[in-house]
Image (cartoon, rainbow, N blue to C red; front, side, top):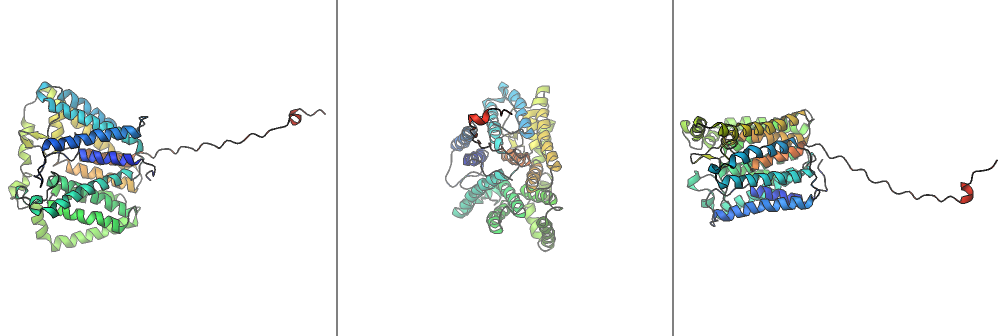
Length: 410
C-alpha cells in the first residue's frame, strides 16, 4: 500500500511533469497561443518540478531503480550524437531537457514504494487535462472538431492532437477500472472519470489508444483473475458485452475504426509505412548507426516518424534502441515475477499500453507521457520501504542508596 505521508509538493511536481510533456504543437486554439509562450510554460513547468522535487528531497535520497538507471544511460548516446554541430542547438537543448526530466524522476523515486500514490496523481492530472478538452468542446464545437483533422476531437484551449487526447483518456480509464476492481475507489467516483473519458476517446477516433486500452486491460485483469472474484466477474461481463456489441453494432464499429479511409491507406498505416521505409533505407555512417543523429522533433524528411523504435533508432542509434528495449523488458519481467496484486495489475496495464502504442507513436526515447507512464509502473513495482523502527523510550534509572550498593558482609 502507498504511504499516506507523501508530501503534497510531490503531487504538484508530478503534475508539472505532466504539463511539461503536453507539447507545444497541435490544433489551432480558440485563443491563439504563440508557440514560444507554450514552450516557455512547459519548460518552466519542468524547472519548477525539479526545484520542488529538490526542495522536498534535500538529502538526495533515492530508491534503486533499474528503469531510471537505464534511462540515465540513454543520456549517453543522446548527448554524444547531439553534440555534433550538424545536429544544431535544438538537439542539445532537448538533451538538457531530458537530463532535467530524468533527474526529477530520480528525486521523486524516494516515494516509490509499490503503492498507488502516483497512480492517483497520474489520474488526477490527466483528468484535469481532459477537462480542458471538454471545456473547449463545449465553448466551440467547431474549433474542437475541425475539418483539418477529419472531424476528430482536438484541444481547443490547449493545442492537443487527437492521439494525445486518446492516449490520456485510455490511460486514466484503464487505471480507474483497475482501482475499482481493487476496491480503492467506489463506483460513483469511477464513473465520474470513466464515462466522460470514454466519450472523449470515442470522439478522437484514435485506434492506437483504443487497442492499447483493450489489450492493456486484458493483460492486467488476466493477472488478477485467479485471485480476484471481482476481476473474474468483470472479465466475464466484458467478454459477453463485447460479443453482443460486435454482432449488433458491427458495421458501426467498423466504420468508426476505418475513419472513412481506403483499404490502401489503412494498410499503409495512414502513410506511416512510407516514412518508415525511407528512414530504414537511408545510408548512415557508423556513428549515426550506433549513436543516431541527435535528439530532434521525431520527424524524418519533414514527416512524423510515429514509431518509438524507429524514432529512437534515428536519433539515438542502435545503442538507444537496446537501452529502451532493456528498460521495457526489465519492467515487464519484474511485473511477471511479482505476486498477483492491484499494483502489479496497474503496472502490467501501463507497460502493455506503452508497448502497443510504441508501434504507431513516438516518445520512448525522450521526455514524454510514455516515460511518465512507465515511471508510474516502476513506482508500482518498487519494493516497499522498510519501516523505520520507533526509538525506544528512555527508561529512568532507578536511584540506589549507597548503603544498598555496598556488598553485604556475611
